[in-house]
Length: 65
Ligand code: SF4
Ligand code: SF4
Image (cartoon, rainbow, N blue to C red; front, side, top):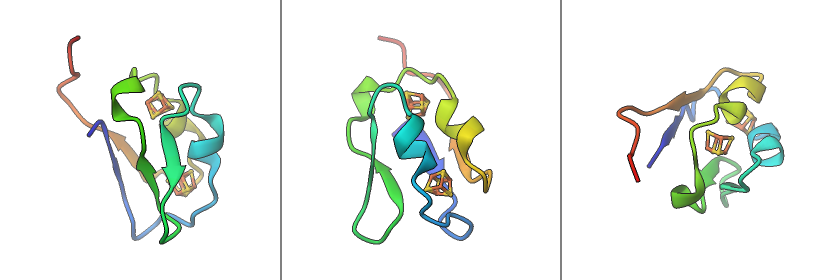
C-alpha cells in the first residue's frame, strides 16, 4: 500500500481516480477510493495534489524496485 486515505474527510469526488496518470486508483463500493493496482504507483503525488480535501498521504519509505 502506497497511500492512505482519510476516510473521514473524503467526499468521494473521484478527482484522485480521474487524475492518477497510472490508473492506479478505483472507487470502492463505499465511495472511497482504493489502490486497485498498487504496483503501478510511482509516487508522483498527483492524487495528493488534486485531492480538494487534502486527505491523501503518500506512505514512506518508498518501495524500491
Ligand atoms: S502517487 Fe501518482 S501514480 Fe500513485 S496513486 Fe497517486 S497519482 Fe497515481
Ligand atoms: S480526491 Fe480526495 S476527496 Fe476526492 S475521492 Fe479522492 S481522496 Fe476522496
